[in-house]
Length: 67
Image 1 (tube, rainbow, N blue to C red):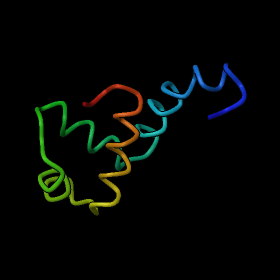
Image 2: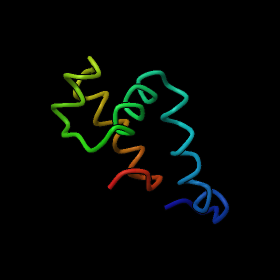
Image 3: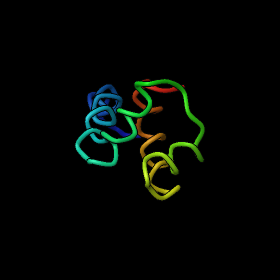
């Protein structure tokens, strides 16, 4: 846990802007805007490595955009 309360409060916002700053994050967000998808569907449809999709999903989950 961070010792800076302001940093802790900003963590979701930082996560929110981290993923869309990466083209892969935008591809995933665009796909998820059409509806739910499983990890394997995202990797196949977006043409991304599973580790890349997992990393971006974790970031999106951290900021509350996906469950």
